[in-house]
Image (cartoon, rainbow, N blue to C red; front, side):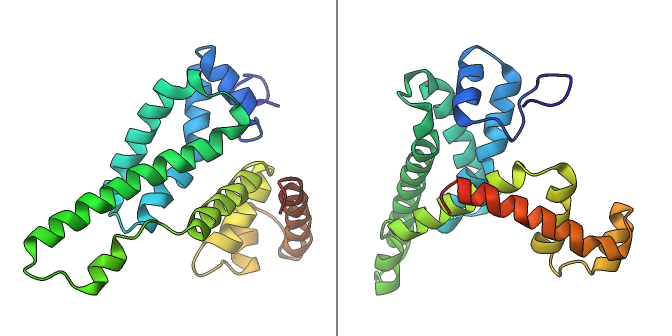
Length: 195
């Protein structure tokens, strides 16, 4: 399942396989593991209100903790939950420090600040994990399908079929058919993931 001749890890590798390769000292597996989860890790601090710079710092901290704690992970299937929990704890501590600092600077603490200090809601964590599942499913698509999904659904504004066809070197009339096949593949992957 790795890339064609190199045996290098790719998006289709399971967490179990990536963890095993990481524990065997495969640096490419570490890169693949971080690539797979960096958007999940980065998105959680942003949901707590952190700046992009603070989120990047937390991403590095979580990756360092992952590096040191991975050998103690009991089940590699629990990796995503572990990453989410550790990141949410770091983001929550950041938020508490941030609010405390702001409180010290203010003469009166307003109600809005109290609400901002509340821990992240479980539904936000659940949404973040769903987003990661979608990223994983898109990452498991063929490169052409990944590009089509990115250009049609992640670009703002979405590309018109004519421009998409030009970028991909395809006939404009084939875009709808190929898009349909790609979305069917994505749907199967999401169903397999429990969506």
